Image (cartoon, rainbow, N blue to C red):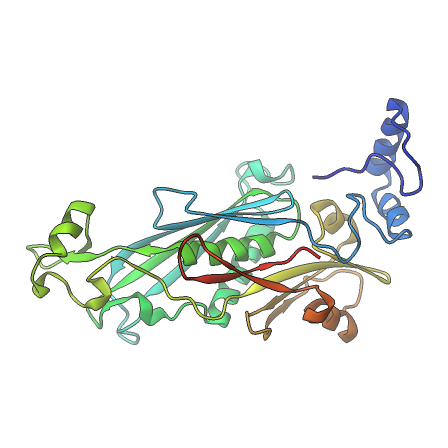
Length: 318
């Protein structure tokens, strides 16, 4: 977590004793510490109140996964991976596959997470993540069909928090979108027992030259990328009195308490608004500031994913 080494108007005093006093004040009076910065319309890490932290995305970071992505928003780090396996589709949805989402916060991600005790925040983020991906319609589940009523893909999307330094849902959602965009769906073949299985590399070479009876449908005839539709992006803000802080750190979230997360799709339509309690009231004008693209709070910048033709949207630093 970024740490300030001086007060907003304190000059360039590098004396070790002065730094210890500041750090002691920060630990003993965290709210007053942040308030002194807010009075100057700046934050302990030197950002403006309306400025998000730098965001980076790396694709294909887990070689053993069918799709993966690593996202960093400041120090917050999320790793997402997708594995697919063949399943029998549900009778009510014979031409659709499924996506199962799991979010984990291991003890390594934060000193607040204790070994052997699941983090309360993890279940909340997992639910919000699932709702966002479902409501946005980013994936047409028919894309996961292999043969209607016979076989479909079950995609397991696992997201791991490696460093929890605020705006966890923002980073988890971005990593999930990246992993789905990176998903490489394998070919399938039919065994002698009539079982549909993912084809190995050697089997894929054989299937590509085999008869059509070896493959159930065009969806399993060759490796392919998942076609993504409107992609969701999240922006978390902290509220305190008259101040609104974009993309808060874990320290700011813990001290200021009132947190809201707004999720939009790539067309700017509101998907979700989440406010887990807190002391401040989220007025309509405040919410509009968070979702208004001209204000730069949720500006989306389209960028290419590797050498593929897929497009995702990442938050542009303000």
